[in-house]
Image (cartoon, rainbow, N blue to C red; front, top):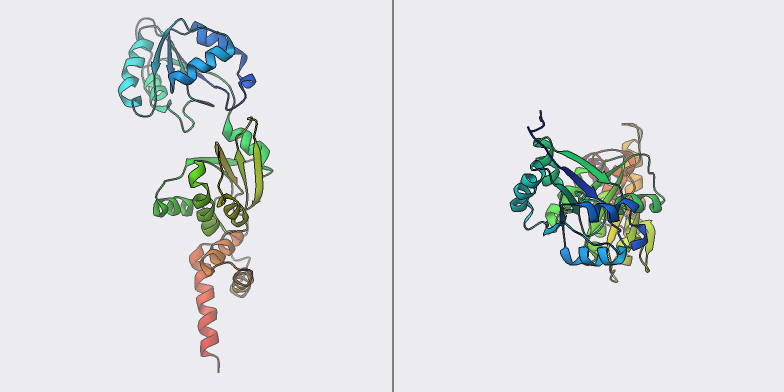
Length: 292
């Protein structure tokens, strides 16, 4: 349980910044930039471009606050907050703390009883979700996947039966590998949308099955990327019998999918563990071998 400190305390303001188009800046952002005692910015050069674009001047102290110094700088900012300062936190784009610096500072401020508020602003997560054409009533944000292939597959397998729509961030040079891994785990036919350069001049939303999107991305993709993936379809346990599971796998194999991918896709469609579909396929093969 947190308790407010004795004496005056400041306020921590988390400010959303444009993810592309500067015209999307929240109206309050300019006022907060001019009012803040301390502006903590993920990139001070981008902050300068932002203030110049908005036609405002910061009068407070500007400090860098990025992944590399977040742990070391947080105590300094908390000290300023408990001393009564108004600290404004901005990242390169979007809302602080959403796969960007901010969580440690918010947690530390809350622990000290400091008020935390926000200037709501653009969000790549919500923008991509809205544009995807996929269900938006329930979703979960998974951030960036691990860079190593084995760890990436492991993380995806943790959510292969997730019913909610999934949202990911990804670097353009890893997009093809990520989509291929998703196709392997979720199935090549699972619907998805790759949202590129949102709100910018070359904005593009590419929709299709994961297998199709992986082939498209193999040609090379540039820009800021957000990937939205359809959740696993709902199916009552036991609704699909073993014979039907085997038939579905065979159909996918005949269409060119590898058996491993076909099994993963059928399992996701039926809402079953992959092991259950795999066992059904193996049993069917053994039955054919034993047949006279």
